[in-house]
Length: 109
Image 1: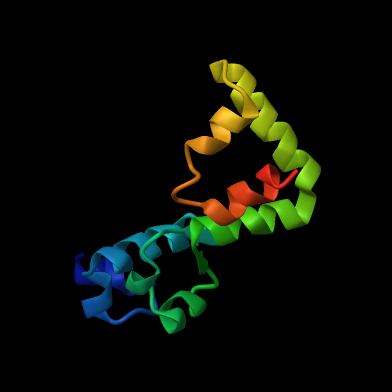
Image 2: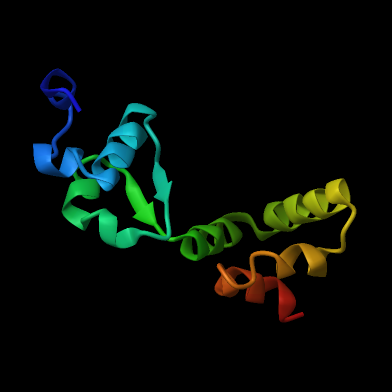
């Protein structure tokens, strides 16, 4: 990343040159509230916190959405399942290995 582009970011140049730094800088430019990633180790808490971007894992993010409005999440899952012609259970089987905590919220019924 050119030095001229580093100025607005409160990150050390070495971190900006890393994959995590570039992604975090992009999130900041987009004014993202969340950066959802499986690679939490690439985003030091102090670096993300300085940018008011919450770095969070996918399962935790999805669980947070459920806590905010479970009915809306259920409705979106139903919409997605219907759009691709599968059952809710089939839809949830796809991310079950990646976000088991989220999937379990809907399969415990």
